[in-house]
Image 1 (cartoon, helix red, strand yellow):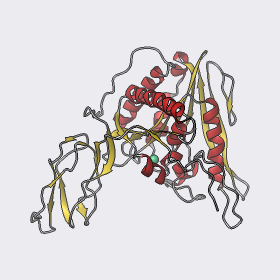
Image 2: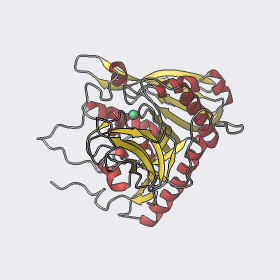
Image 3: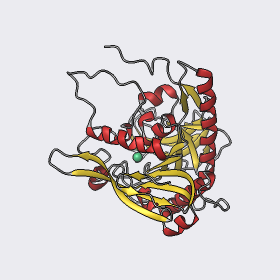
Image 4: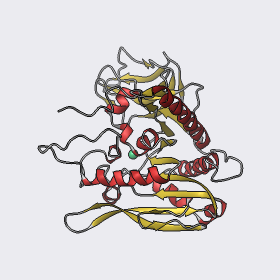
Length: 374
Ligand SMILES: [Zn+2]
């Protein structure tokens, strides 16, 4: 129970505040991640909630301010670690990418691969990546579950990105698979407890290509092997109060599922929750076949049948295109519209959650853990 994250020292019955050094600057300053540790008087598991990885996504940190209160501590068995700003530079400047590290910061957590020999002609790992590697060690050391809070885009539904569970098949494949299946079931339990709509992440190949296994929740799930997901909370620059409240209720239900809180599960109110009765993964579709002005026929949260008209397409003069209306190629539901109505050939008009029949437990590619040959 007695542990420290950065300068925040957990104390039973208290909320502890502190910081974790992320990067030290050549100019002498340090960028610090704020850390809040709320610990109940009674022992129990440790649940991490993280937010603020992408600068323009503001709902998550507000949700954490609402969640972590003295009243929560009085009810708590165990410990809640809340990190409101994983990317302080991003939040300060309202930018997705921190000014001192190129690329998406949510792809910098460790990947579990054997370390390659240093290449004298290549820049070594950057300081932010090293900082997240140190933070990840703290997650591995202390966390039993994790939810990372993000925002998607304006008009999108609140939903969970649920990663597939990967396992090593190069040795002890049977045992690794069985453990992965158990983790997969626990992740289902956590998603169900949270109670918002669920969208599966990509199948293994694209998941690794997109470096999603190096996101906060991807690394927590597939490397630290704890139930973890990313919660997307609608629009980021204007946090939606209904989604914020539904997220706090979902988090408290997640804490009940993990046995940190007692009492009955709270209803998720004020937001649309879609459960079509089958699993779905994300796809940006349908794509318009020609330049056009689009009229969306469906709202976020609507369920869709394959073959159903989902949008009308006109030219700029208002005449219907020969291909209009465009029909859905998939069963599924609408996560949100793409922004705007003026589209070029091949642009997607919606983000959909489409029916997914692929396994949620998959092996890493055989070559994944092999050291890279020069
Ligand atoms: Zn994000």
